[in-house]
Length: 108
Image (cartoon, rainbow, N blue to C red; front, side):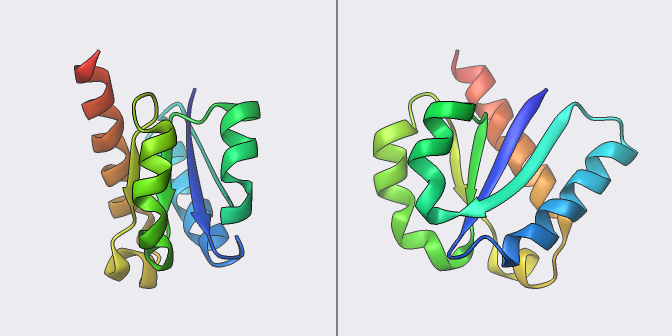
């Protein structure tokens, strides 16, 4: 089971997107767990839950470099496209996460 974690300022706005992503994954029988959290939980969740992919809400783009610095060698980090985020397009965001995961797998 691959864990895709979404982070935003409060965790609320990404909750709906994470739910839609999970619905798409379930419909396609993909072994994926998608969940959303507040940006204040990144470090603790990486240490305790070891996500396979980190996606940041567009409002957290400024955090990408520091998170990649800390975890980018073992966990791919991406920023959710603002249009996909605004339209809650779970399928497009899930595809982007899978592409990030595939890039990580190829680097091994």
